Structure formats: structure tokens, C-alpha cells
Length: 81
Length: 163
Image (cartoon, rainbow over all chains, first blue to last red; front, side):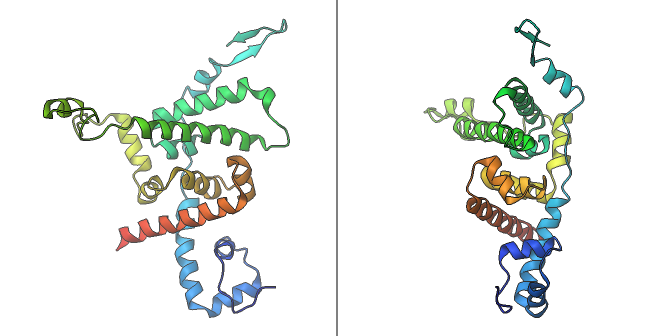
């Protein structure tokens, strides 16, 4: 069991940033300005990271890949698409 | 997977080449896939290896701004040096600058490649620490250390920028 007076670990700070920190540890956070400052700094970075956009390749990418793939034929040979 | 590759190599055309290489390896090597492994993790593993291999090769091949290492005379150095700014920015370069030019993207680019893979898998792809360890063939403790160090470095870069 974790002592309520112990500072939050980096794993716990990540849990807090995700809203998953157990209530007992959240109580420590409410009372400890050191942990709150650290947790806020960490949350800012995590928020920036999770909001990063997903990128997609340019149009025609799937066709270019499939043109390179070998498909097995019923005779057991490989056919280039 | 394309996002990971693009952020690893920061070059759209190259990321597409590596993504293509990854899919061809996946589709042609499907018989070697082990079902106890998550399929998407297997794809990320192949993609990440392709990116890391490329970055290692690029490190070896990097040309000095002062010219080739074996250049002895000022003429040879001039002839083999990289000329910055002598190439007009193409439309693709503009897209890249727009996509990867934000402070957080530039901060990610400054991380060591192994930190970059871990932090992207964790916070962009939403992998758990255990899944990252499986995907990258790293001990769980190493993954945690890399992610914590990466976040610390990112915080440093971003806070320097704000100062």
C-alpha cells in the first residue's frame, strides 16, 4: 500500500493525466503543491501529444503497394499483381 | 503506421517508400506471422525497423556541410559541400513544413529515434507499455524509462520555447 504522503511517481502522474488516478493518491495531489506543479507540466505535454494529427499517404498509395505484391495462384506459383 | 514513419524520418516521400516496403514485407511474409502477436504490433515492428535502419544508414552517409571527409583542398571542399538554400522549396516541402513545423513536432524530431518510437506509440497510437515492449522487443522497464525521458526532454524543449 502506498503511503498517502509519498509524492506521485511518473506512472501515477500519467494515470492522473488520463483521469485514472485512484482517489487515495488524488488526495495527496490535492495537498501537495510540488506534485501538482509537476503533474500540470506533464499533462501539458501529454495533451499536446495526444492531439497530434494522424497523417495519410498520398492518393494512389494502396495501388502502388498492391502492384508489388505477389499473389499465389491455384497452381502454387506466384503471380505479380 | 504512416504517421509513425513520417514523424520518424520527416520526409513524406521517404515515409511512403518505407510504408510501401513495410506492406510488401507484411503481405509477402504473411506466413511468418505468429498469431500470438497482435497483427498491428507486427506491422508497427516492421515499420519501425525500416525507419531505424534508414536513420542509421543516413547517419553513416551524412555529408558534412564543410564537404566530403577526404576533401583536401578548398576547391575540393567547395565542390563536395552541401549548399543550403540553393534549392527552391517544392510544393511537397511546403506541405511538410506545414505538417511538421509546429513546436511539438520539432521537439519530437529532436528526440533520439528510440525515444521517438516509444513516445509516438504510447501517446499518438495509444499503445500500452506492454504492447510497446512487445512491438519494439524491449524490456518493459526500458520502455518506461524511454517514455519518461522523452516526455522530460519534450517538456524542456517546449518550456525553453515559451521562455
